Length: 108
Length: 126
Image (cartoon, rainbow over all chains, first blue to last red; front, side):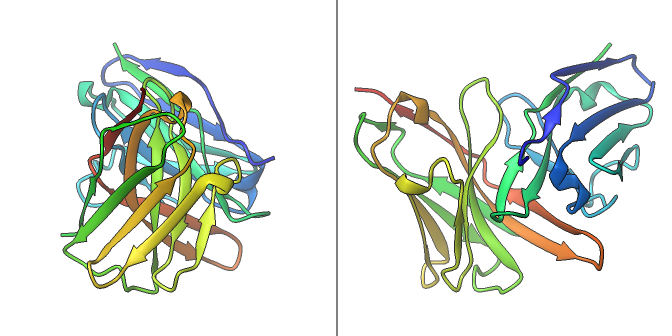
């Protein structure tokens, strides 16, 4: 399957840890990449290549993977972390790119 | 600092062709390490990959759009372009361009889009 599945919505209390998951067969061969998107803005890269963060992304963001599941963790969630989060990978059978459906994170 | 900027008409009539450009500044598209991509997002919906181009002309397309999509590059202008034919209301979306980077190890591979352009809304309507 070339699909990536994400929970539509997740909530977290301010300062607590939250995990957002992404499932798909392609994740057995490809690391998931994670993007954050706020309303009206372009997505920005938050996690890539195992568990790398671009400059400017706080170290409370981390990534992990096991089998066909990738996880984005936010330790000590802040109000500014409220956003949509998308995972992305690649379908090895045809070199196509696939995005997860996105997870809306609410910080309470 | 690499920056990408989309440009093109914001309104396209049904059955016509959508054409967008992505101007790249702060770096050259003539780099073997990268592909250059188009991604779109219908209002209120998720991200959909359209396709990638390498400066050599190598291209990959979303199978669901392949029959209608052309992506081309202009190294002299350091930009790349998207053409989507026979558009319908379902093609109404914010269209983003982005750089695609890639990496591989012995056991796994990775690729990522960064940076992204700010996006441009294209509405298909008569």
